[in-house]
Image 1 (cartoon, helix red, strand yellow):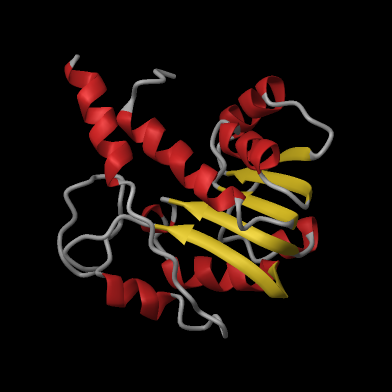
Image 2 (cartoon, one colour):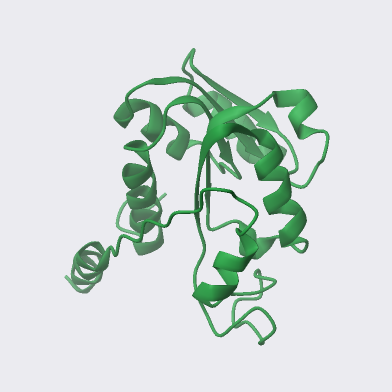
Amino acid sequence: MNPKNGLLIEHKARYRFASDYCQGRVLDIACGVGYGSEMLLALGEGILEIVGVDIDSQVIDYAKEHYKHPLIDFKVGNANDVDLRDRLGRFDTIVSFETVEHIEDDFRFVNNLKNLLRPEGRLIISTPFGRGRYEPCSNPYHYRQYKEEEFRELLSDFPKLSSIVKEIKELKFQSQMRSTI
């Protein structure tokens, strides 16, 4: 991984931000190669366990090899699998960064996250905003991009929906400056 990659820098910034809000049992859904799970554990306080789940067995193998820690467990799993709760249990915190737009049945995905979350749990989720869920998307790997109000509607089943918006413009600017040097 290129440490100067702008997308990587932004992704790490999301984990850094989320670390202040994670506690107890944490699920990192669509964890990829696992660096974010390790970041959460290193930066967060009150984290008892992190379970990193990804659908790709190769990235889970990589995570298990490179991010070993007794409080982190990486597993292969599908975020839309309704049996995931039976396999993993419930969580105090779930993080899901830049994932929902890649999933065809986004309402099922969000409902599954709700079922995995303990009643007073916290979901930290991000997605890129765009022209709207029914408009053509320029990214071939995305099923859709949401307008902010559509994203809020998608999450409306969460009883205590509160939003935290943190712009990372300074970080983006620094990333762009590094790439021009």
